[in-house]
Image 1 (cartoon, rainbow, N blue to C red):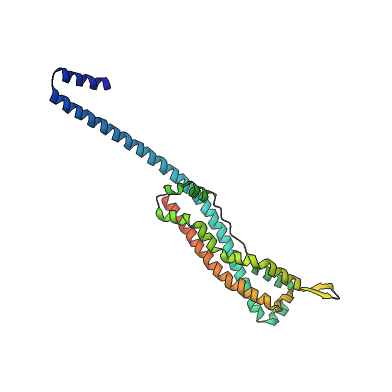
Image 2: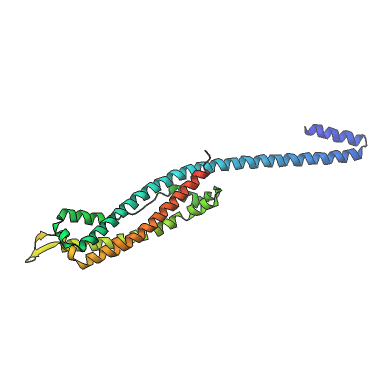
Length: 242
């Protein structure tokens, strides 16, 4: 092809057709420019296609991770709701000694155990962390999705501040209440009565402060996190091409 163009230029010069030569030269330059633009366009299209394929693959992997996180979060929320219900039942019991006296110690123990259930939430974040640390989060075209993913860790920490507050105070307090159940005579343990904590004012304050007030606030944040997580999954589904 190059020899062909050279041959044309040579013939035009030999025939002293300068005007036609310049027109031809300009045309040849235009053809070269058009060829370059086409090549660049094809390369750009191929690159966009590769990025689109990578984006789809990342979205599908991220969807699996977020769905597992949602399922785990729902389990934690259910347990915390049961904890709150048990605490509310405990508060009612504080106002009804007859009902308390009739309650078997095993039932009271089970109620305390359910009230104190304080599951923490540790979401899987391997894929999301990889996206953020590698900068590949920028591959996603949906700006709202990128923002929610970038702030997901912070949202999770905020949502479980109350749970961690309970977790911090629960062991030493419960140890104290359990120890109070031992009945001694002449410095010797003669029996154990777990129901003694019922009349312990600290136990009552502890129930109100942590498993009523703090738990309610925590559940509100946890439910809000669940809504955000569901929103993330919906946005991912919208971006995944069927």
